[in-house]
Image (cartoon, rainbow, N blue to C red; front, top):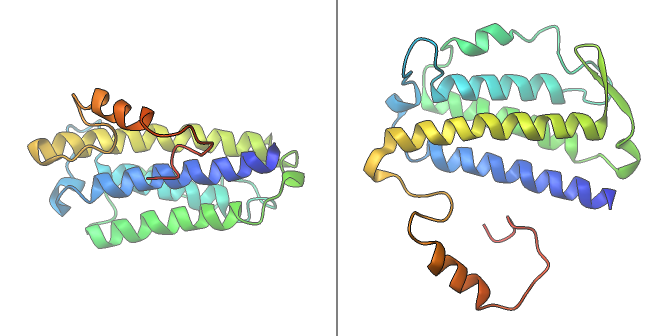
Length: 184
């Protein structure tokens, strides 16, 4: 069961990274930096925050507090990165840190207590915390990208008015035991 948990979490994190990748691929560099208003975040700011969080949380995951002394969270909400290439590189660096930290974990690690801002979490709780946090922001990123791409947007899930067709295709096949992201 718990080994299944770790496999499932890796697949979910991979899925949310892909959603972000596919959304950002649909918009121009200029639109990555568009802020709807002063109090809203651009896609670039969301990416800076996510990658900054990932680097802090997952560096030395089992041995040091998840809120690193070197992290400047407030700066993540200022436009620091200026190009799409830099932004995608930072995004990938954050995700790579996460996947590198998850890879060696075993079911024996899940009850180990780690700390985030000096508050104890089991490894499983810490993973779940990030599985709530990252999709929240990836959803914001996707929404902004969809709005900015306008009529050029290509759906990342079942397109509008295509549910019946999608379901017919799914139900025309034999039942299988697989993870919903396996065929994406």
